[in-house]
Length: 142
Length: 142
DNA sequence: GGTACAAGCTTCAGCAGGTAGAGGTTCAAG
DNA sequence: CTTGAACCTCTACCTGCTGAAGCTTGTACC
Image 1 (spheres, each protein chain N blue to C red):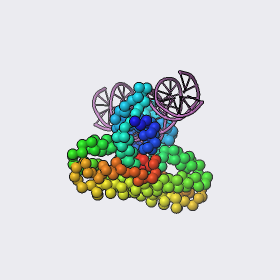
Image 2 (image 1 turned 180 degrees about the horizontal axis):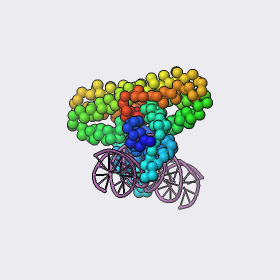
Image 3 (image 1 turned 120 degrees about the horizontal axis):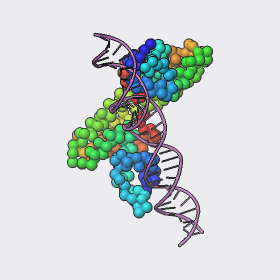
Image 4 (image 1 turned 90 degrees about the vertical axis):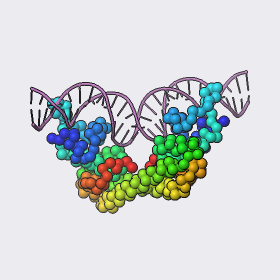
């Protein structure tokens, strides 16, 4: 029987976060001691590790929910799991592409900066006049 | 005198978002008509465009606040603006690196998947056993 | 001048994916 | 039996918006 702090240390997940996962139904409701503290089995540790690994690979909590559901039905074809992973891969590739465009632009800004006065600052100038340089209007915060 | 909808269309920013920027003090408080509707000058349009371009380059609202402050004091050295941009560049580069590691891992998962049953699914297996493959424990949601 | 209706207004709530803190209780080692 | 670290719940907050409810204003047309 593991306490929540043990799970936390073993998986590098904050205690609060584990409780949060329980709250949103991603972790099963843990058993409790007489005093009301959560106690876990090894399988809960495995499940949490699975969640964390998936998060590290950028899967959304919703995708992880799907993956966990799949993993619970071992007889089925894994085509669904594969397609979730594929979807994720595509997303990651898109993000990389966008970030590389940003990087290029930022580099241009930084390189062109001559350290003079703000009035002639290339950085600020580029931010002002940066018309449509990124075609994807909604590509913010990626 | 421009209405909020005009600013919205010209910059590709939602009306709500413009009001939000005013609320958090990123845009100046707009003048109002007798009936209480916001009216803007060209300079407000420029400021909003600056904000949007900066957001497209991934700057946080806080960084943008700093950049706007700098831009308002034209006599100063632009070293600060440069360092904000540098900081942003470093962040973007780190994100790209991490995403590339993710991509590699996802690709491995997807390629190894043989489409058989969930019980032997490589995707799920890798998610389960993905021990410390990403050294940076806090590198989530990049 | 009257009317229709698009566009504006405020306020509140919610999204992801957690994190932080207050204020109180329990567990386990010594 | 005491101490104190670890646990509990609950609420609020973070970023960067977005949507909706319910109401008012501006303007174009007749």
